[in-house]
Image (cartoon, rainbow, N blue to C red):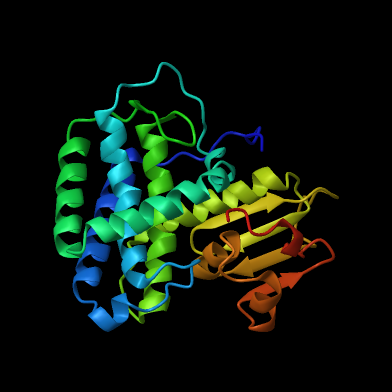
Length: 264
């Protein structure tokens, strides 16, 4: 999937760093309160249990620390808008690694404490333009941290729904996750005939067709951030979201069902 030709949205690196640490802190506190019964529940993600999902959430952050420990690659290979389309190939490795991590770390509190300490220490000195040898391709630290907001927000939502928890979502993390996935839609379906609104965080134009110039666009899709994130990652189906009135769609080019999900 090629990168978008238009200029990539910019993110404030300091705010993104703060968002990643804040959301991981939210998850750490939430996981600490889960009972053994909750941890044993199915996570609704393949064969994972909630315990395995909780372990997997630490990987989203630990991968930053591990990549900062590795030698810096020679050249950037992946842009931020390439990333959503580069993740599917790693699904098998992620599943295997998660099961092993959960088995090797029965004490989730200790695991979370260790991961949080490492990421806090490493981000204190690492420059934003430092290249990381991520498995999806070499990226700058600043870009990679934006992708961590997606991992953290998506899986926090998974955890809440599977365990019946109420772990809060950091506003900056939720905003960055929403915007990146909205921009990924515009990459996948370039055009300006349809306006997708995800208040209060994002508005993008996409889908080939007559270009809108003034007034109310003829094709409009609107939804809330969490519904959008679930649609973009395959947690919710387009038809289901429409039937449950989680999405409003008007116009002949407002059917996004064939474009979703963006990430598996």
